[in-house]
Length: 168
Image (cartoon, rainbow, N blue to C red; front, side, top):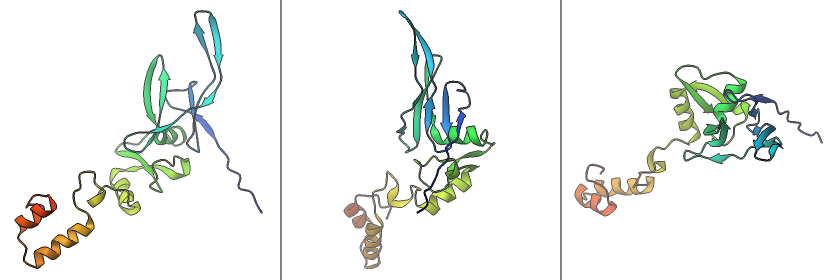
C-alpha cells in the first residue's frame, strides 16, 4: 500500500513579514519572537495560530502588529502569499465551495461573476429557502400554487402562510 505524502510550503504573510507565515495547506504560524517586560526580555516560541470562523463562514485569525490587532481571512492570505496580490475586479474563490478548505490548490483569484457562478454550481448560494430571510420552503410554494390553481384567493393564502399578498 502506498502512502500519500503531502508537502507543506510556508511563506510570509504580506504586510506581516517576520511576524506570521501561511502554509500551502491553509495553516498560519506566528513566528518566534523576543518580547520585553519589566524584568527584562523573554522568548516566545513559534506556534500554529488558532483560527475561527467569521459570521460568513470563512476562516480568520487575529494578527498583531505594533500593538494593533487585525482580523485576517486565511484564504486571502494564502492567495496573496503564494499567487500574488488580488488583481483588480477580482476576489478570492474556493474551487470546491468549502469556505473552510484553504489549501492553495483549492483557491484562485477570479471575478465576482465567476465566484457567484461557483456558488450556484456548488449549491452554496443563498437563494430560495436557503436565504436567511426566507419564510417559504419549496414544499410550501408548491402547496400555494396548488391552492391558487384550485381557486383559493391570494389574500387567504397569504394569511395562511404569513406572507404578503404580493408574495403570493
